[in-house]
Length: 373
Image 1 (tube, rainbow, N blue to C red):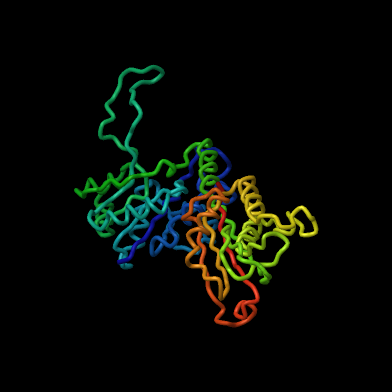
Image 2: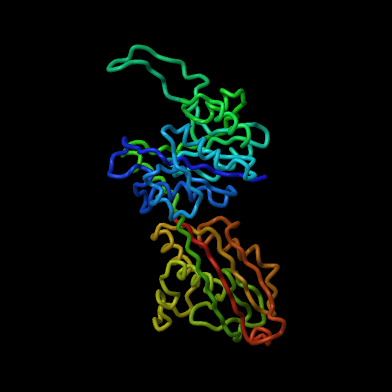
């Protein structure tokens, strides 16, 4: 089974203003049509772009099959369908080039609906009151059962090809063509962000949507080591674990919390614990490591991020970490002000190799992910 997407971009789009047709105007730094094509990569097997004959040289850089558009949208779509005939395509999505914000969910829903229907298309129910009139209101119209049509409109390929070849022309969209041929078209939920750029103001709205969608993820890792010294327990991830020895350090030597704190600072590109709390400063001698971790999380909030998750690995032969893992996760969650299910604490040995294997100390590794709030 092969799926194809036809991107219809042969119009001139004069209502949008500007010196170029709207599909070639810049949106967030690149042409609208680039965004539209990108939305289908990896979701269909092939993409075909319908282009105005004057724009064929401009579109050559896409490296995709290009079809010259016709005098009407319906003619343009038929040209593209004819170009795909005999190539093994079984499902086809027909999409407006000026709808650059279509989501993977909408594309997936339309394709899935074609498993059970000849046609499917996204739409949103009309929720506003409907009026008739010119300068003044002359009447109202019921909105029950009315939908705002969107694209991509999907079809079994052979059915929509035959429907277009038989249609006299003048259809508003491909759903009208399919219905004229007697085919059922299933409605799937549309998306308010899947707007068709028509007027200049639509570009500003699309810019806002793209800005909101922009995913800003930061990853950081940390590593720390502390040697054993005399004592009766070790601080690990905010929990004092009974042991025949303690860990040596300028602060309380919580090796797990130090690695995690450094991972957070690293994700923010703000150095490490030593930058913010210099060991040369006597006020930090013997300090509780939660002071450092709280500060790191304050920096996360100040920079406009939240913690997605973090993972701490303690490397030691002894003490055994398993009985204390839940308490450690709970302690870190309380200090960091996040849900416990965002925190992982686990342990491993080094198979009696190296300084941890000789029980000379404990090492810790940590990773964290921050996302823009």
